[in-house]
Length: 87
Length: 523
Image (cartoon, rainbow over all chains, first blue to last red):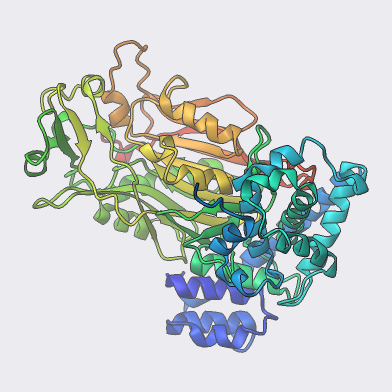
């Protein structure tokens, strides 16, 4: 897995969480490191991940898994909320 | 007599543009900060809540449902937009600018307006700053909020952090009545010398989490404590500086790898490794980080000796790949007094008749929050920082991170000692789960006069629901793996809003002593 700069880590987290944001282009352009830019582009779907280094691939996979996991946690939260508020 | 401060002056002090431009603060954290700061400063919330809810809402559930609905509407608004329903409340606030602050609590309509603005802004910010799942394609509030938090350490857009900060919140106190009792999702922090830093880590949270606690070093020698001669000479008689040096050249990597492998064999996975205060050097930290799997986080106390008159360092490093490692210095130096010099048997190197201050650099104060999931925000404190109310404890209490890890260089972590007392305070208000960890070497060195010696208790766990749990290192073992499971409970604000049962509490659900495989056993 890559080690990102503070800025790149924040930007990639935003790219993967808010892919529909109007600031996506601006965010991609602000990435400092070349490998981080690859990660960002793959995550927003403007580049495929067929020919990237294992470190870039591992980072991409990690962020994708994170988002899936966040979805699972969010669904659980909503279920708890529904159950609590229907009582 | 000098002029009394007015509501207008107070609010302009927070948001200067209100002097000339009183348009509605459309960004919910800004609105929250202004209104809650005013309620806090005047203490009006205590008076208001004596007769609550507002008469037009009749019951708490009607109030809560109405406010929640407005919050959802605000959350879905586009930038610079806000629910029209709040315009009336803001007008009430603006018309009160000339009223002296101390008269605020007598102004029932104004207090109700402020409380409503606080509550709706809070509801609008549910989940702001927490890791997201792409579920909502266009969500300006969440999107911009995450950026502000990561970049500036505040959710405020118009209010400068030199005046007030607003951070996300994980716990609302369920005891007592303070301004912290009034919100579920946002916390108000006074401007302070400490810079809070908020980082979202792509951490994969399972239903439970396993941590490997390594109480290293296993031996601490008296002669590792040394008088700092040059710096001490500048002090009055009766005071001195000391430094703790760990010159052990031992390569920990192989040992930690072996413990990690063994813990993983027994528990299936290990999400994090924790080492105590001043347990390793910068070089050892780098080697350890290199050797551990990237999906395993590392929280360790790292120290460096004083050199040529320059203070040493005592810091916690938080390593959550792919994030860059984060460094947080200890905020308070340790002061060794007579009883502690005797307790740790240091009389041969430090006179018990002086007060000895740890010679470390305490500048550049920051507090790091690692946001690992919507249910798990953690922060780490170093020793004294757990005990002293400022400068960091107030921020910790405001945010209420789910997990606080305190790295100590201390005696055994028994229930009777100071760390347990302060862990209990944080578990009670706001509701943090607290893990404290010291080294086996320091626990061995400690020989308190009055207590029974229980030098194998190297860690302590405390959460809101259970009494403090002492964690012992059995003879022959070198580490302890603990399992944490998440318990959910409903928290309520003092105005009667609940979070729907989503307050998350890590609970100790397993303790497993880990012995290293024979090859690395050296004791």
